[in-house]
Image (cartoon, rainbow, N blue to C red; front, side, top):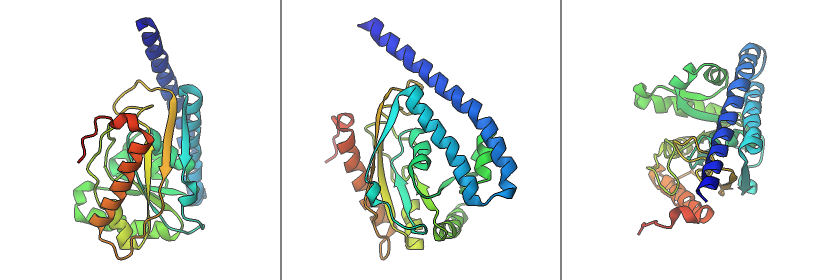
Length: 259
């Protein structure tokens, strides 16, 4: 009935507001604690301190929003404290940005625009972590920085995570897979780990109406990068992720017209 639908929309809207308020209230003291503690702690300790807030936000999302992660393929992750990996992740919502840090056993280094460092509290805390922030105005020099910093981070056991489509993609859609992640992997002789995430059925792109449900996350087997070309390697990553997305969320692709 229409009234039931409207009631559910209102409930989900209120849940989303409550979750946003929870994150806004908790990020302030957490970020201030990170900024104060940063001069006295190692970069790894600072990372796990920040990851604690991300885990808290994901847990709050489960309690408040009714969104739960269902992960398969943990056994595919590289084993060893310094085993390197470049994670290439399907991007549909903000949810996986938080969940990857909450789920992964290694510190992660995101590659992001330096403008994010200006965001009050959240950006200030990010600036204290050992991440890869780039200035896109630098052009080709920006990628040189990614490789230099990426190699250093990978050597110390930090995994680099990138979203090859570059932006959030609507449910059932496929973006343009860019080769930045595979270029880094080839340059550093690091295996890539493809990850499919069906988050948009709970958290649609550019929508504030979130829905309770399961977010399926599938971790693929590492793909060696030695001797590969970035374009060809990314095509393999893209093929695996998009095929896995259709397996995880088949109803989103009922009108798929790929040849």
